[in-house]
Length: 302
Image (cartoon, rainbow, N blue to C red; front, side, top):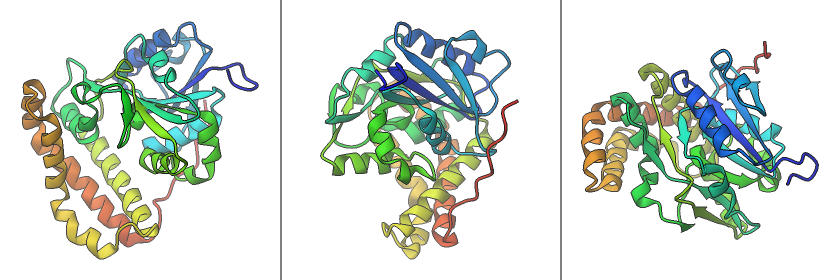
């Protein structure tokens, strides 16, 4: 348990454009956490009336207007009291055994555990495009238990609070899982896949909302990449036009011969390319701007 709080698990839920799924997401999380010393922190937009009151140990933290998911996660992490911190979004519907499946493999050497992601029935073309752009690497068919050489999805992952706090200074601009994973691996720690920690991606962003999100994510990434010397401005600008095609090729390769996913990916490809183009434009803008995007002050809870 946590050193002083008696809490085993904190679940941080970023809430951006999740009006259609938040109630179901919270219900599934509460069921998964039953019997555990757990708290659920919702961060971001005000949830639909009554959502937080239907589940015990749920708190809402008001985020900054227009904040990105990694920024909301970082805010929740700073408020977390559990020995283990799990991250997700209000678009995810987890299975009953999700919490325990994420928690079980964590040790001092296994510093992060991630579960697979799939599409929920009833989703539409825009949801499919969001899903394949963000989560094609984490399909259940690709997610076997054991060590992970690459990354786990921050949207369905758990970490030790002590590791998150040790690297808190690097999260001033948000929790970006790829950077955090690089730090953990540099300490000799590993990431682990847990196939039983499955979550489904439900009806999600509106078209315009996700275009803005992708642009701002790309802008932050481009700024950080140039600042850290990972890639120069010229290379970023020259490569921007082909980024959507590269991302589409990667997603298609991951989906492979899975007929159901292949047909939905093909149907959503025009929207996928639009989202990928927003990312590429943001990355180019961030590489040129020489500064991070401005973040508004947090709102006061009502």
